[in-house]
Length: 600
Image (tube, one colour):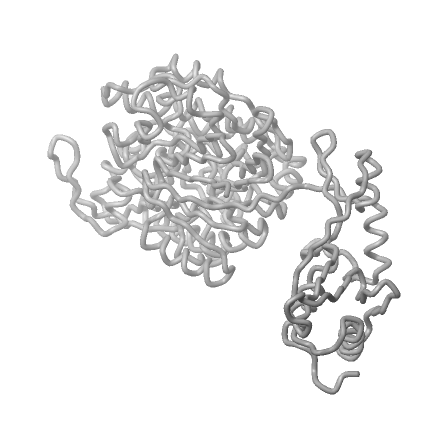
C-alpha cells in the first residue's frame, strides 16, 4: 500500500526551529526551515544530516515551502540553501517574500555584527537565497512538476501566512501554522473541505482554551494604564510583525479615547518597515481594516513615535514596543536590563517564549538572572503574561479539523506533555489517528488512494431503472460493469458497450461441479424428483424441466447420469455462468444433502 512519511527535523515535540520533511508519492518536500531562539550554537539550525551526510540537498528535495516570515519558520533558510546547498524552488506568499529578508538581515546583524558569532550566513547569502523564491498567490494551484502540485490558503496567523495543500496523484497533505480565528484583529483565515490524508498543524497552545479576545484586550489596556498612572514604564517585547501591529492599533485607539499624554515608542527601522509592508499588502488584511483604510490608514499612528535608545533613560512614564519578542537579544533586552530594577515598571510578554530565553525564565518566576560576563541582574519590575499570540489554542485546532476533515492528524511545534493531551482529545472526538513524532522520528501513514473513474450514462440509467437509491457522494455504492482504459483514463461501462468499443467477441465463462447422490430411481425419475424438490425450495426463481433431459434454474443447468458399477449412485453435473455464482454454490450445497423421501 502507498505510504506518506513525515519526519520533523525541528519542532518535533519542541517549540521553534520548524522544519518538517514530507515524503509523498515519491516526492520529498521540506515544510519551513526555521531556527531555534534558545540556542547560540549549531543546535539553532535543523539537523540536515538526516537528509544527506554529504552532498547538496537539491538532489534529495523537490521543493521547499515556507509558511510565514517568523524566524522560527524561515530563520535557517539562507543557511540551508547557501551553506548546506539547495538550488531548487522555495515557495512562499508575496508578503512573506517581502518581509522575510528584512527579518533575516536584522537577526544576522544582532548575531554576527553585535555578538561576533561565526558559522552564520552573510547579507549576500540572504540575497542569493531570496533569488530562488517563487511567490505564491492564494487559491492558485501551482504545478511544481508533472505530478506535484501545491495550493495556498490564507492562514490568518500573521500577514502573508499560508496553509498549503500538497497533492501528488490522489494523495494529499495540508500543512498549517496555527489557524486562530480569534487571534488577529487585522487578518482572517479559511480553508475548504479538502479531506487530506494528513493534516499537519502546530500545537503551541495545545492545552489552552483562551478567554475571549475582548477580555484580554481590556486586561492589557488596564495593566498599561495602571502602570502609567503610577509613573512607571511599560516594556512590550514583540517580534516586528503581526502582534506589534495589533497592539499598536489597540493602544493608539485607547490613547485617543482617554486623551493620555504619556509617550508611546516603537523600535525604529524594523517596525517602520513592517508598517510599510502592512500598508503595501492592505488587501491581505481583513474586511474591517480595509474599510477603515478608506477613512484613515490604521498603520499610521498619531500617538506612537519612533524610539531612540537614549529615551530609555528619560524620567517619567512611557510605553515601549521593542524587538525581539522573547528578550533573547537586541533592543528589548537592553531596555529590560535598564528597567528591571524598578518595581514601578512592568514588562508585558504578549506571546510564547521558548526555553533558554530571558522571556521564558522571567515568566517562570526567576528573579535573579545570570547575564553575559557572569553579571547578575535582579528583576524587581512586574512581569505579566498576556497571550496575544497568533498561535491557535485547542479550540482553534479543533475548528481547523472540522473545516478540512483530514483522515489523519499530525502535531508539531508544541511541548510533548501538552501535545499528548491534545492528541487524546482529537482521537476521542474525531475518531482519527493522531501522531506527534519527535525530531528525527518518522510517522508513517498508509493511504488508500482513490482512482478516478468515469461512468457511462447508459450504465447509470440502467442502475436507476433497477430502482436503486439515488447517488450520494458521501456513501459508497457498488456498480456492476466493465472497467476499460482508453487514453490514460478509466471508464466503467456495460459489458455490451465494452465489447463494442474494444471490437471483441463475447465469450461465456461457466463453472461446473459434480455432486454424488444416492437414489434408487432411474435417471429421468431422479431428474424429475430434483425438479420437484427445487420448485418447493426456490420460490420466485425460473425453474424449467427441459425435453433434452436437463433442469434449468436461471442460467444453471443440471444433468443426471448413473455410475456403471452402481445404478443407485447418481452423478449430478451442475454448470452455471459467473453471474449466478452465488445461486450455483447454494444449489450444489443443497443437493449434496440428498433428496427428501416421499418425493414423486
